[in-house]
Amino acid sequence: MIVPLVMTLWFSFQRYNLLDPTVSGFVGFDNYNYLINDANFWASIINTLLLIGTVLVITVVGGVLLAVLFDKDFPGRNIARLFAVAPFFVMPTVAALIWKNLILHPIYGVFGSFALALGLEPIDFFGQYPLLSVILIVSWEWTPFAFLILLTAIQSMDREQLEAARMDGAGAIAQFFYIVLPHLSRAISVVVMIETIFLLTIFAEIFVTTAGGPGNATTNLAFLIYARALLEFDVGGASAGGVIAIILANIVAAFLVRSIARRLEV
Amino acid sequence: MQASPARQIGLALLGWGVAFLLFFPILWMFLVSFKAESEAILPGLTFTPTTQSYSQVLARADYITFAINSVVISVGGTALALAFAIPAAYAMSFHPTQRTRGTLLWMLSTKMLPPVGVLVPIYLLFRTTGLLDSRIGMIIIYGLMNLPIIVWMLFTFFKEVPKEILEAGRMDGAGTADEVRHILLPLTLPGIASTGLLSLILCWNEAFWSLNLTTSTAAPLTAFIASFSSPQGLFFAKLSAASTMAVAPILVFGWLSQKQLVQGLTFGAVK
Image (cartoon, rainbow over all chains, first blue to last red; front, side, top):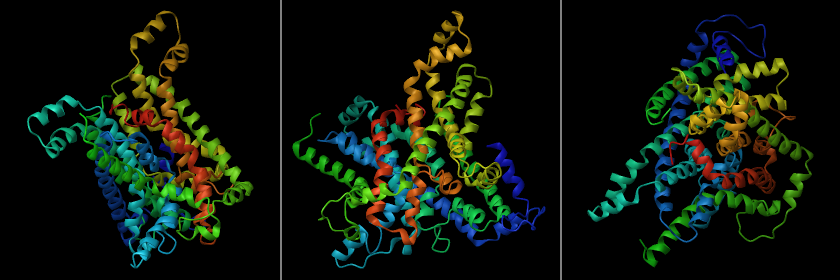
């Protein structure tokens, strides 16, 4: 991966357009300048961070709640669990299309028909709340992942400790916050790390549903660079975006690796 | 501790309710795939099941090509990644140096780089070398894409093998190759299998590279499904049938391998 990385760096200082070979040459930091003064670029950074942050919160909270629920015994628990983890194995393009056309579509979707049946105005999700819709889809895909990992973690918990706490009069909520949650902290940090790795690079869900729009409402950094390079053929500008994406990822990675590395025995 | 019946029923309702909600989009896709196209746009629950969408999707000769591409490049990419990762993980777990830990962390951090960061050079490299839209090209990309995670997983599994066993083998005159083939691989087969499983799932579902580097000849099912998003191609029943066929194998696969996946994905940190 080093070769393409160096090439990206090199291209980012070049004027390079795939359609127009006559335009070329070293331009210094022009590509970066252009990018930094582009409102779309800042919107894409904010969208990227919003997407990652919101999805992390939703999936971790949802995953913990689900894990606690499925830790309890109830009839058919194992089969219900299979259904609950299923979304994780669905390919992103399928997930995006199903949600877009069959669930969220204002006219043909399930939500829309529900609203109509209740006499309400159907919501045009991707038109009115585009980023929220993407977050909804991505959270749907990743909550089962968090759930799966956290359930495994919760099942390894020492039951006698809980029993002892109950004897001492700890209520369910106190037990959760003082015993269950600390026990899960290691698993949660693993979930956060793995999800961040994949969420930084979310692409298919956006490509299929909104193509970054309307306007730049759902353009994340990944999509912005894609659009620059393969829709506008501006290799220089796209490469500059790529370099910035790499820097951003490294900042996130530095934080993550530092906090995770301590928890992993290497 | 035995919960009261009322509590049991409440838990069951809650658990099944949540599971149903999460599964609903998949269930709905499955149901719509058996509707006739004219019924598919209506959200009604009563319909005469028909498999016509399936036969129509299957009748498109290219569906088979996409499916074969998916299988070939997922399996190929996984095999390639394992071929590189096994020696790498072996070296790092049994002959560690001062820098091993740093190398491992560095590898993992490359996985955090957005692939778009290297999209342009890879696109251009592939264009000049003729790898664009070829299965070989996709196998290479898929192999490299998951390599960091695969090395990590294998490293974790290899670490659990007691060093004494390998040393005993060496005493008996086994070279490095024998050591790996006859001692390490059989011992860690479950770990290698779960690593391979995860890689297969990731490759099968991968969309970024397949959408950007393939057009027709090497395009896998992810790209085929994405082609349904074009405005003139919206046939809900056919979309659902194609999606169901694309998702079903890997879903069953995932269900069967949940346990190994958790162990692998968390690098053994979560028991």
